[in-house]
Image 1 (cartoon, helix red, strand yellow):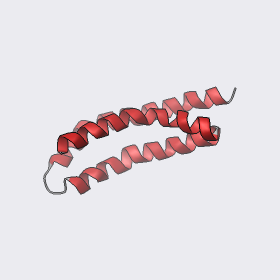
Image 2 (cartoon, helix red, strand yellow):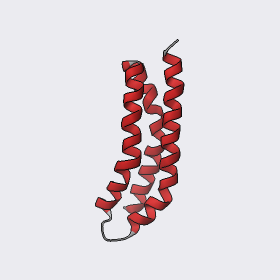
Image 3 (cartoon, one colour):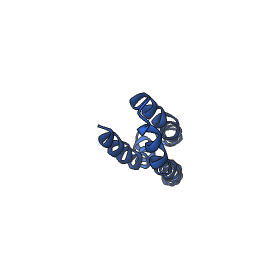
Amino acid sequence: MFDDLMTLLVILSFGFPAIPWFFGARWGLRGVWLSTGFAVIILLCLFPILFWVACGACGQGAIAIFVLGPTWIASALLTVTSAAFTYYKYTR
């Protein structure tokens, strides 16, 4: 089950940069930055809490955070970059 959770979180983290495009198409510029803020908060704050709940005493959660941490940080940076591109696309 732990391997499935790790795989799911890697796939989800690569999907986060697409969120500003979806919300920008629906709600315009306001949706771009609102969705970006929520995506970055989820990436950097809530994913580690998921490991604390899922693997409280087993120690695998700490290993997963160190392995997936750089992926989450890169995904958060890509999400902000994607939001900037989306912002300039919808302003024209």
